[in-house]
Image (tube, rainbow, N blue to C red; front, side, top):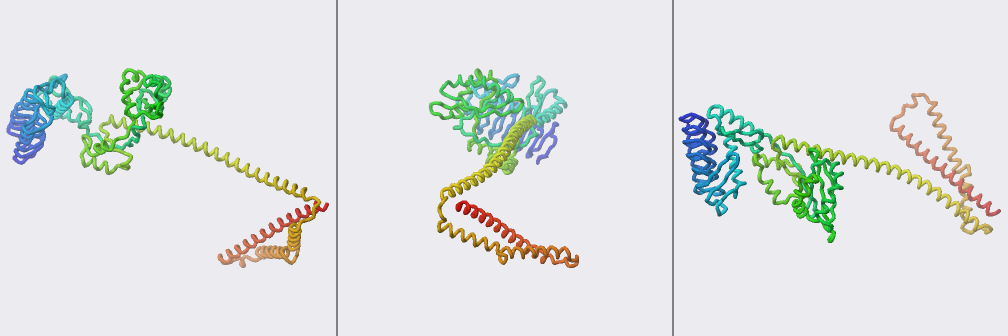
Length: 507
């Protein structure tokens, strides 16, 4: 109808009305939109892709890729061009674009570069546009049998495009387009660690088509080759090896200038090795050379501000918000099962590296524990030996002092000390003092013990608080008794020692 929706035009096919939008067919077949619509469609008289007056990507009346009055990328009647007010890259009226087994570009009218585009002057961008045209034809209007079988081919091409693999048939001549990840529906986002290396660190990565063990064994042959390239003015340092998926490995190296003892910057080292990669490095199994650098702030901001192809701005913003550590991690899109498989292999290799490192750390901890136990044992032996040496030194000092003062009478201080010790010994031996009190306490303890044993069970039912108080009192008494006993023993030993020394001196 007039206001849009999906329907059929006058002459069959799929179509929309004057003010609608979406996918549809015009009056004479094919795909098309009305005057003010937008999207993908065909004009009145033929095939191809086109839009109405308000622009976008489309075809005019006579086929080809073109745009209306308001610009965009497109073809006029015979080639690739732009409308009246459009801008961008394009060819004029005499341009031609032929996509067959190869792509030929030519023309005599200038685009935005100021001079004419001849030969392959803009081949990269125009090849991209040609590829996009092929993708659109394969997904929307493949013309192979010119009957209902083309619809089946179109739907099969769309399925292949959604899973990101396969070949889409274009026409009866057997031309096809290989589908990549542009329309792949199987995609997700993961987070990878941001590199932190700087240019002045001078680290360069060498990708070898050998396993880590093979690369370590081949380093003896690779080092002379690298040394011959840089000469004797530089020394080659190695940061380490790292295992990569598919039995590959990575070698990280750096160069030191002997004159200044400074590292060569990573970019300079990378450019130097890149010039010799084909002739000197590839025969050694090096398939790629790259600098190990961090990402500049401007490039990182530009990357995060623009969502990758196939991801909406809203989803990309959500991905950035869910980043667990924005200062260390960066979101990385994974499109298709091939990239997912590669990511899984990288994760497995990284897990092996981490597991190996954990095993090494565990071994180091075991070694440290064993060394710690040996050190503790040695410290105990040293302390015991120190006590023995202290005792021996004390005995030697006593013997030396006794020998030195042999024949001399006691000094006044020594006499006072002897008198004091005698008084202490007499007090300890006095039954009315400490010894008597100790005997009395021991008797009370024995009596209490016997009374507790001999009493009937009914007399032992004490309150818990009272029982705890009794226990505390007995415990304190026991401590006091033990302390007094120790004092008596120490004093007795001191008195015995003094008596012996006095006897020796008198003799």
